[in-house]
Every structure is written in structure tokens, then in C-alpha cells.
Image (cartoon, rainbow, N blue to C red; front, top):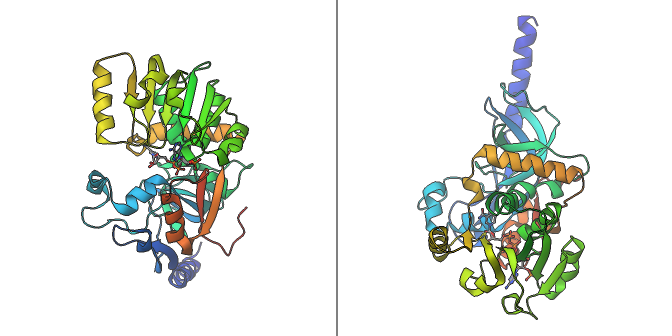
Length: 351
Ligand SMILES: NC(=O)c1ccc[n+]([C@@H]2O[C@H](COP(=O)([O-])OP(=O)(O)OC[C@H]3O[C@@H](n4cnc5c(N)ncnc54)[C@H](OP(=O)(O)O)[C@@H]3O)[C@@H](O)[C@H]2O)c1
């Protein structure tokens, strides 16, 4: 390329960047109620050498997003910021299209449809930069942006708990308490994939859905207390944080495992005690603390399951970026069915 063309291209790119440097984002500058979110025009991020710029079409609101918004448990603030959030644009999960690549990126191209989760957050925006060494992959052709977005947070967590912690295997009996939520709906399908015999616990209105996802048995918690029906399970996976190991110890087989996705001090204490004494074990983990390599391995396994239509994402409802507060209020009620999705570029058709 001769030097005048190079200069012209450079000037053109600079001009395009200058007129295209702003984007809309849902910004939260302090910890607090769902009303902390405000739509603002902010500077569009520029990808670093090892990053891609993703035009975000779908993000999600999960229990973890609620905790980050509130800044509790306080220990999380060591990472998020002590008195106010260091990162003012939340949002961990994303699905979208790559519009720019950093100069060292060879694994992705402009135009690729991608999904994943970024520990740098920033997905409650029209654009976000994602490091290509983070959890990111191209979206299987058979699923859309909305169904792709929730996979990296919730479905990886289910793999971490069922495969990683409980070493689930064919024939295991598993009870999932909270089978209709985000973790629960993935857990029913993933456990069936591993050949487990699955009992899902949910409220009356969600029984049919949980059964249709593949559960062998469904218990309506508003009518029956599973801890008192005399049945025992190899694995009890509580996604609600509403039951304790002590209350359902008798519902576990001799070497049964109690899993809880909701970490608390009493749970940590029980984990410690049961790791030393007794055959029944309590286990938990924070998926975000796993190495990127481990999360990416689970993610690629999940991508195959999505491609093979062995699992699917259940969507409760979608909100535009401008209604982030409403989305958070809804999720906070604790009764969503599957996943809540944020549509970030609503003037574009989701495909
Ligand atoms: N440790 C980790 O790494 C990790 C990762 C992701 C999430 N989490 C945590 O895991 C929890 C679950 O997340 P999620 O996104 O799956 O939540 P969610 O989608 O809000 O699911 C909650 C589900 O619980 C059910 N439920 C409510 N009360 C119940 C009860 N008394 N008995 C049985 N089921 C009940 C609801 O079903 P009905 O409407 O039918 O009542 C709802 O579908 C959150 O606290 C989240 O922060 C932890």
C-alpha cells in the first residue's frame, strides 16, 4: 500500500471512530436497590491486542448479578470494590457478534456470532470487550442469541456441581430442589444426559415444564415435603439456599452428597465437618473462582450438548436494556422460570 493511501485509510478510520465512540449502557455507580441502574451514553470500549469487541445482543440477569449489584456478601467487595463498584457496567453473560478484533487475535473473526461469560463484566451495554482467553466460543447454528447468553453462568455452574463436585454417573439418584430456575432447568437436562434418575422439586405451576425437560419424578413443594416422604437420593442439589443439610440428611443414601449453590457460613462449616467425619458429605463451590481453563472445558462440552440438542435454554422473559431495574426486581423475587434475558440492541432483530 502506498503511503498516501495508508494515511487516507488511517484518517478515515480515525474519523469513523470519532463519530462512533459512544454507546448506551446500563450503569450502576453504587451498590443498592434495582433503581441504581441508569441508561447512559458512555465511551465505547476499544479492544486490546488480545480482545474482541462484541456487539452484545443478549445478556442475562442471574442471582449472581443481584449479589454484585447489592455488594453482598461483603467479602465479594474485596474483588468488586469496597465502598462502591469498581466496574460500573455489570453483566457477566453475553451473546453477540464480533465487530472488531485486537491485533493479536487469530482464533476469531469479525462477523463471528459468539457467546460466553467475562469476569471483566461490562455486558449490560451495547458493546463489550472480551479477552479471547476468557470463556468465549462461536454460537452453535441451531440456537439464537437469547438461548446462548445464559449458558456460561448457569450451565457451567451445573457442570461444576454435578460433574466436578458430585462425580455424577449413570444410575445415580438425584433430587434437584429448585428445578424450575436457571440452574435447575439446566441441571435436570444435564443430569439426564449423564444417565441419572432425576427428581425435580418445584411449585405446582412449573411441574409440567420440569417433567418435559426430562425429570423422571416431580415433587410439588407446596404440597409435599420431600424430606418427609422416606425416599433417599445419592445426590441432593439445592439451588435455592432454603434447605439445610441437617433437615435432609435422612433423604441421603449412606454415602450421599448434599450440594448447595448458595454459599453461607453454616454451609462452609458443614463442608468442613463432613470432610473430616461421616460418610455423607456437604459440597459447594463458587464457579467464578474456577480457573478459566476448567470453565472453558465445561463450556465446550455444553456447546456440544446444545449442538446435539441434548440440552436447551428455558427463557422466562426478556427485557430491553432500558428496563434493567425491572428485570432485577423480577429476578429478585426468586421465582423465575429458567432465565431472564436482557436484549441490548433492541433496534436489531435477534436471530
Ligand atoms: N455457587 C455458584 O457458583 C453459583 C453460580 C450461579 C448461581 N448461584 C446461586 O444459585 C442460586 C440459584 O440461582 P438460579 O439462577 O437458578 O435462581 P432462580 O433462577 O431464581 O431459581 C430459583 C428457583 O427456585 C425455586 N424456588 C423458590 N422457592 C423454592 C422452595 N421453597 N422450594 C423449592 N424451589 C423453590 C423457584 O421455583 P418456583 O417458582 O417453582 O417456586 C425458582 O424457579 C442463586 O442464589 C445464585 O446466586 C451460585
